[in-house]
Length: 340
Image 1 (spheres, rainbow, N blue to C red):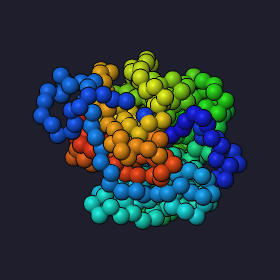
Image 2: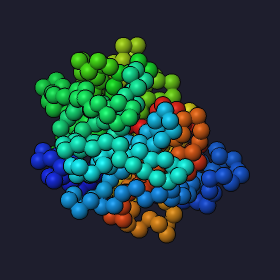
Image 3: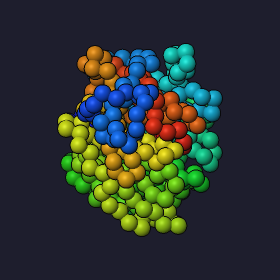
Image 4: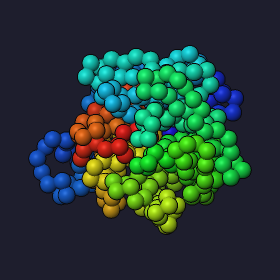
């Protein structure tokens, strides 16, 4: 999520502060050598539906965290939805219809993902530093985690689960001050133990495991870079380095998804597009909203790829509202491309 200039979401919570360019002519589905087209390929996304309008109370709408449930319905978070309006929507992508899934009077939710451990949906509350979980039907809300980690409160943005159900959270602490205080926090699956795995990050945003669960990709919004954190057998960070520098122009790095081949789908704030990279840092493609539809759209924050399939659904937002766009991904969807 977020963004420069950083916006205060006072109508949502008094303490809340939250703070897209490809070239070429090849489009998805055209024949050709993908390797030869690397960096030149443009994938044109197609509109599925308009999900939300700008909320009068908050002056914005911002869609995030798409995740498919076990029934194939897509759950989408609206970060700026005010109290009482749907903060999580359940979408039938085949029928292009949506319905309210969950709301409350407090949360500023920025991501969603289902746990492999208990099957519940987990939401990050950026404003209050909480992790909230819901039953698969949207009921039974629980505060899974709240409070300080190593003496400092969190601003949890995105999250990823390991195979055992432990949570890895991008903590954008320090973003409002423009300071490198961001962290990656690991919370065990019981919610009782939390530890800082990495600190000194610049507004960490997207977070996803690689295809083999050996390490974490973490995007740093204000630096337009993706860092790689190699993990050891205990889930601690063994090494850390800058893996990809994203030439985004006015756009900044948002959320990350990873497909079955290990490709990274890097969401962008500032332009309704996504940059796609190989695990080796090669620019493979740019996913773009058609130019005729791009006016009034300012970000493509995140994507969910259909589990076991290649149909991808991208959350796009701006002054014209919040939309779902679809495209064909470069490889099949897996857990790392479903939420976060």
